[in-house]
Amino acid sequence: MYRRNIKHILGPLAILIAIFIFYQSWLKPHYFHEMPAPPPQVITEEVVGSKGPVAPPQQAVLPEMKRSRTIDPVSIPVPRHSELLGTIHDELEKHNIASAQTKLEELPSSILSESATKRHVAILWNNLGILQENAGGTETSVKAFKKAVMLDPQNPVAHLNLAHAYWGLRDPALTEEFLKKVLTLSPDEPFPHVALADLLQEKDRLPEAAKHLAQAMDRIKKDPGLQSYVKVVTAKVHRAEKVEEKFSTRNSVHFTVKYDGSEDPETWTTVLDILEAAYRDIGQKFNFFPSKPIMVVLHTKTQFQGSTGSPVWADGLFDPVLGRIQIPSQGATTDRAWLTRVLRHEFVHALIHEELGATGGAIPTWLNEGLAMQLANDSWQEVANMPPGEHILIPLAALEEGWENLSAEKVGAAYMEANAATHYLIERFGMHKVHELLLHLKARQTIAAAMQDRLLLSYDHFQQQWVESMGTTLSTPKS
Ligand SMILES: [Zn+2]
Image (cartoon, rainbow, N blue to C red):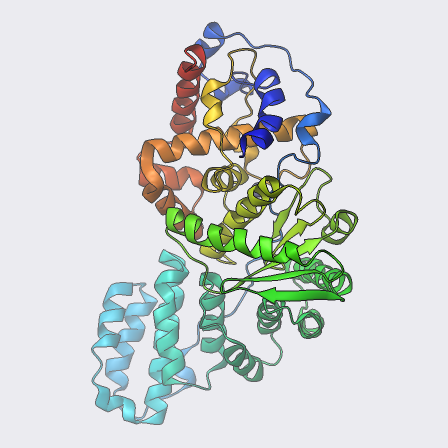
């Protein structure tokens, strides 16, 4: 069923694109002896026609916010046990994380009956959390911040830290109620407003989200990174508010579909069916299920490019800022195979986005797109049948950022490579290892470090071996 569409992309690609001109130093010289570099070729418009590739997600990542997050324990003097607590403070000062944690855990519960001591211990837990976060990422620190908040329910810094940690982990505990409490405790901080706006966007409460974005903007003083982020989000929220004003909404168990009410109502039924099937099937393959319903907006073609700001060659996209899949609905009912492909592809992007978390490290675009194609069955076992010929290969490192600015010619090649490299990665190491790579990316490691750590293979070697595997396949095409 997919073949027609895949071939549409693949046909021209297979003939025109290819392998083995790495930019200068990317390949060892012997490659050039084996397969001399062909001149670059022009790829026809067909590749990026209306049934062409699907846009990579737009990058608009919340910058790391500077926060003065440790608290000086002397701010709360303790009437008793000062020696015991002083020892823990010293361990923290010396960055002895494990020992400080053990000592904190072993504190007798009797000393926590006193309010000042309790608040003092809360500070120690908070400061432990900071050290843990710096050493091992958010996942290791969230427990300490929770302890701090539990011990001192009025501590603004500990609440901010916990909110940041929840946000980074996409933890469902980051609720509206919790964020409102953080707002009350730290009325001058922009972050709780940004996080609350994000939550409201996902619940499609756009006017309220816009209000909190405005309040965040008022509170950002000298942080150009955060300012530009809030500006981008605000613009998107306003645009979505306007475009979707008269849209109807339908829910299934795991999805909310918004669509232009005047469109054929059968469309959303079809869309929900495809999405629920994708949820079961891809969720199982990827071994990850989203924690909350995913929003899908169907646009008519003309609305689509105007409302999402997507590249002209895009058929659909997952917008990580608004947390929603945007799909043009024109032709949705007449070409179910195409609709299925696009919805499944974007669903994978939504899954990866949720798994990596808002402040998680960035996933290289080639891996993001490759996983989308592989998991959505948008894949090409056909790669193996690609006729040998003149091939151009862009180094993977040059395909890590967004592809919005690539030429149409390069975009086609980029998708092919992303798919082939990810296919190789999954075939050789298994989905379990790929998942481990993602967890390392989530902890803000680079793809090179993640590969070295989980695959025991350098990024360069992975690329080289993948290229070699392609070379073999290409020289002896399967029938
Ligand atoms: Zn994509």
